[in-house]
Length: 311
Image (cartoon, rainbow, N blue to C red):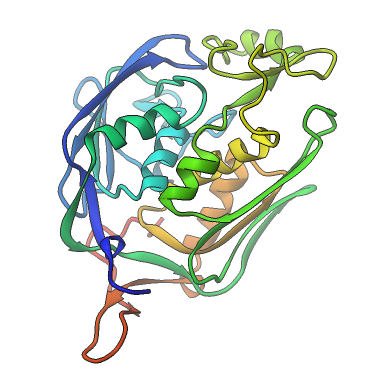
């Protein structure tokens, strides 16, 4: 890997604000993304002064979305789309002010987060970016579903889904992840659900803000009922990839490796990440180092003081 802007940590060039509603709560919410110093990571500033770090150690519930914090205490939920946008664009440090307990769903994808971040731009900081390099396979099985990390020279996602509904069926998305790939192939893929599940979800307190404006909905006849149709013919697996990107962004540092999953979801993504980071032999922390007369290469470094991968 040659020396480039990706060798160094980044933040936003200036603050940007978005407003919307929570897809599950149905409540209005405003989020303000602020520039932050190197090694800050991603921090949510909640009403009342509480802070939540966007780390796997803070993940609570994973029912239909990813929640940071406890269900009964201070928490913020449905963070996966905004986290995917940050990870996908290579934004390492940001302080997020949020006035509700759920991130806004916007159009059901990460596209509006990407547009907002592109509008203000990124600032490259003078501190090297650290990576979690996968050293050996780590796999989690859950019935017919599984997820795993494997060593790979880069950051790659291989996601496969398999639904009985003929509107979805079996789909696979596989690609190295770069900001360009994320913008073009992943960011615009929307969350989805089935009309037959709506009443059950409402009764359980979920999907209260869901609508055709922020979700792809599959009707009783197994047809997509959104008038505009799909944004991609395989939008469903691309959205599952988007979710995986956001969930794995909670590692606390970017990873070098290949993440693969079959019939996965938020819970399995979190379990795989915990499995990787709980095994010291499965990964190492690296950064780039240019040596005289030689191309830049990855070298192992001591973990920083805050060591977010220590669970």
